[in-house]
Length: 395
Image 1 (tube, one colour):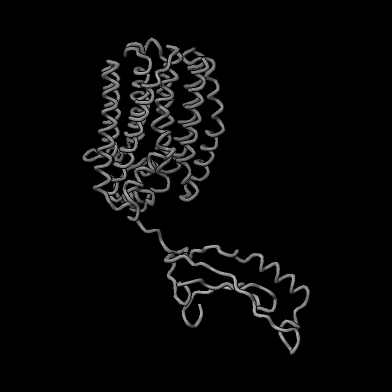
Image 2 (image 1 turned 90 degrees about the vertical axis):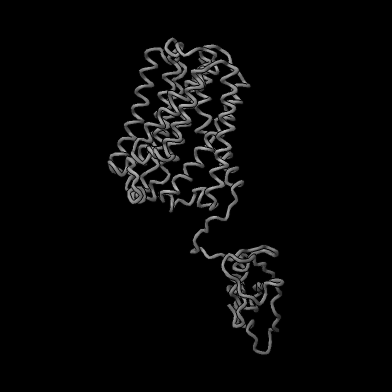
């Protein structure tokens, strides 16, 4: 900062050493820039030439200092490079993103496709192991409807949470990012209507009323999980609801629509039931690992999450129990013939399961270190379900 108030930069070496100076170019010169307010473009200027005689400063420069100066000058920014002056300590501002860009980003989120697509992929592979056929048009229609419903669920969860203040410190909340709660709610409602319409069309074409009722029940669970006046997640039963919504209901409904079989066939071909139970448990593990770092906020807003009710240590042990339970049920299904022998490839997901267990057991009290637990659970969920799907296809 010069005496005139202009923001300037130079390499810190004297002109006599041959180091380049850097100055502001154009209109930015001679003006004070607030942090994050403008782009600063720097240009290289020639050092002033000082003759070696007449007692100039350059006469005292040694070869070693010249080498040092040349090395330092190579670190300086290249000609024409643009820099932004930002204050690292300035907080992120909310309400600056548009609703359309935020919702579009949720469609591209791997988490949305993972949660929405994996039950359909697993159900399709289970149907293939029974009927030896895949229905591409049905698969594509159900995939589109599932993504629409999942985006509705994620958006409205943030909208409803904003009413209670539980997401006041959640930077990734779509309400905090846009500041337009009403617009988000109506956009999400439109997406839900589109998804339900596609589900209804597929159910009507297939004549699978039981599958339609199961899908409708899964969507209803998604609402009572967070929506008023129910807000069952605030009562600590969100993980149980998640198990039934994504496991036995959605997965078996997709199985019936993809296989063309009727509801009693779920007992005759228990591969779908077994797969749905395993998938429900891995999906519930994602939700179970989402509460460690927000215990204080949940308690202040009256949300009785498992971590608030039982403590983080008990929840971390419950996660390990769920992981062990999944592999125990999986082993029983393999030995009894409910799942084909090729499904043993699902054991390749064990490394991601062990990583999750190590993290939650060792860092459950550290709010910063435990934050990735949800993403560890998502990785294990995806690895196990996709490998199980592969094993069913290989059967």
